[in-house]
Image (tube, rainbow, N blue to C red; front, side, top):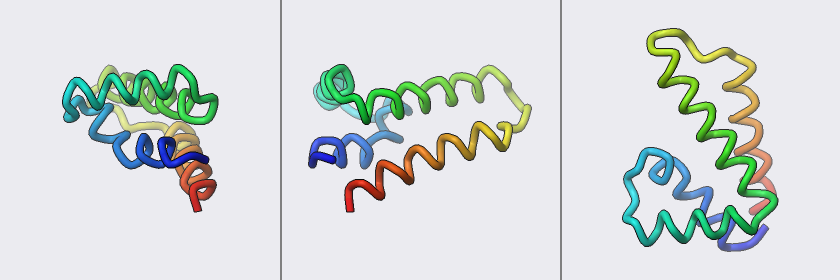
Length: 80
């Protein structure tokens, strides 16, 4: 995993929450357009967040939470 992948993962929460500036968001989007490792993680988390927001007060299914957590753990493990 590249240093750029590690930077994307380190900023993924802020990115998905819309808390990064436009330049950083554009860099992450560009990276994900080219990176077969980061793109599915970012897309999956984005969809998961969307489902959570749409679900309102409904709890996130354990399987969804586990898949997202496992995907991030695998990527972080690859950084080490």
